[in-house]
Structures are given as C-alpha cells and as structure tokens.
Image (cartoon, rainbow, N blue to C red; front, side, top):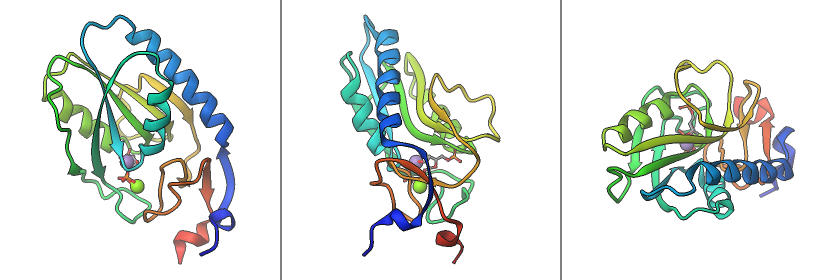
Length: 184
Ligand code: PRP
Ligand code: MN
Ligand code: MG
C-alpha cells in the first residue's frame, strides 16, 4: 500500500523533538533513581508504549528490569470503550520494587488509573509514571504523572506507538490524523 504521509493532517511532535524529550526524561528519572537499593522495574504498557519503552530504556543510566503488560481499552475505535482488558500481564513479582510505568499517552486517564490500582495491589515499594503525552480534559485529574513529555491538544493523534485501528504505530513522529481517515 501507500505510505501514510497522505493520511496525516499535521505533525504535532517531530521525531527530533521526541528524541530530545526521551533524553531529558531519562536523565531526570535516572537522577531520581540513582542509588536505589531495590530493583527498578519498568512496566511498559503495550502496544502503545513500544517505541517509547525501547528508546527510554536505552537512554537511562541506571540498571532496570523490564516487564511488559498489554492493555486495551480502545480497540479499533477513536474513543475509549470504558473498560480495560489485560491482554498480557507482568511475569515477575514487583513486591517491594520501585516500579516505573511507561505509557505513550494519557487521554481519559482510565487506563492509567486502572493500572495504578492494579499494580498497587502487588505491594510495590513505589510506583511512578512516565508518559510521553497527555491530553486535556482527563476525567481522572487526581492521577499523578511524575514525568511528562508533552501536553497536546485534544485531537486524535497517531505515530510513535499510537495507533488508529492498529495502523500508524511505526511513524517516527506524532501527528494528527485527517478526519476523513476515521470518518469513513
Ligand atoms: C491507548 C494508549 C493508552 C490509553 C490511553 O491504548 O496507548 O494506553 O489508550 O487512553 P485513556 O487514558 O483514555 O485510557 P489502547 O487501549 O488504544 O491500546 P494500545 O496501547 O494497544 O493501542
Ligand atoms: Mn495503550
Ligand atoms: Mg490503541
């Protein structure tokens, strides 16, 4: 098929801006975790966080272990279904560990608020959140986002892991999809 360029209305965060932000976030998180006595466990929230997890982990200067969860609330729609499904769970015990949740985007906040409760149930020592993107109008405004890349407008974005109906995840930038792509 054709490349996706035609489907993108405009770029919201360029590939270069993403990589600069990844470096900045990784420096901050590394500084805060330096000297931690307990294991640090990154929990990547797949599929969306696949690109960020890979880039972020490689920019850290502290040792970590990696866990992957696959959660889905959107399916093929542009609005959340309102329920979170576990498609893949963590494999190892996070009790007394320092957990860092790695997310691509916080939109309604449903996924993250659900995940925080779920992981807190495993009695970790701490849980912090790093997210590349956040949209306005989060319903769950009490959600702590310890490390945030960018606040972006309330538009449907794709790229750098974010999908529409499983497509566009591989784009190296984050862009707004043309409405006609998801309206027909
Ligand atoms: C997307 C995104 C976040 C979540 C954010 O995941 O990757 O995980 O939605 O939305 P929320 O704050 O309204 O919950 P999605 O459910 O589309 O699954 P995916 O990561 O596999 O694309
Ligand atoms: Mn996701
Ligand atoms: Mg999705």
